[in-house]
Image (cartoon, rainbow, N blue to C red; front, side, top):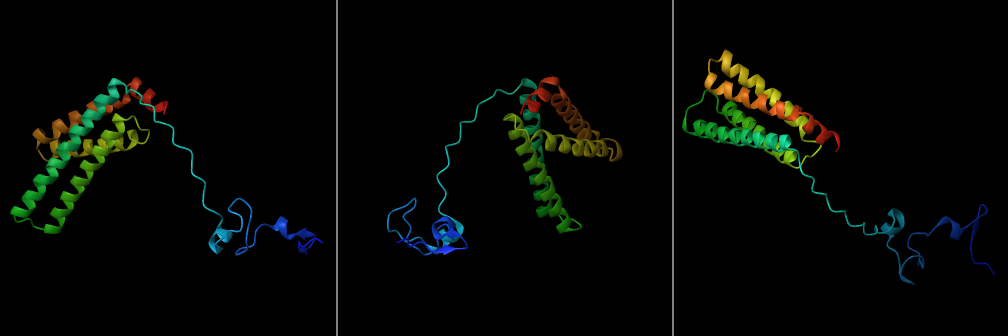
Length: 180
């Protein structure tokens, strides 16, 4: 005699396991399945190991661009520390604004450092943010050099930006990021 219940022409076996029932499918015979496993499915199978990342050599222009961005990042972090020292030892008009400036400059340094690492590894995500940060630095350098009459600050910033944008625009650098 067939002990399978028929519902609407379908057997219970064709409907799948019912939560809380003893199941002999794919597991230990007689093992009681937890309700969550019945509702959400069993544990995932272990994934295949990730293939090793190939170490590609970056073009010379990209390596040099990464070094320029790393120098800019170090300068930004150093500037943030100097601004923090001046904020804590001086008497700024607004401590909140002075601390916000420290945070902004520190964040720029961290972003530039991340971009330098990304460029060094020829990561596809790194080129765009680095170019955007270079354009922002160009505006700041122009403002410092020509509108604030601080050419000793602005001109080196503009030179670093020009070198960086040139290195990232070379054909070998564009091809390295295009192939990714």
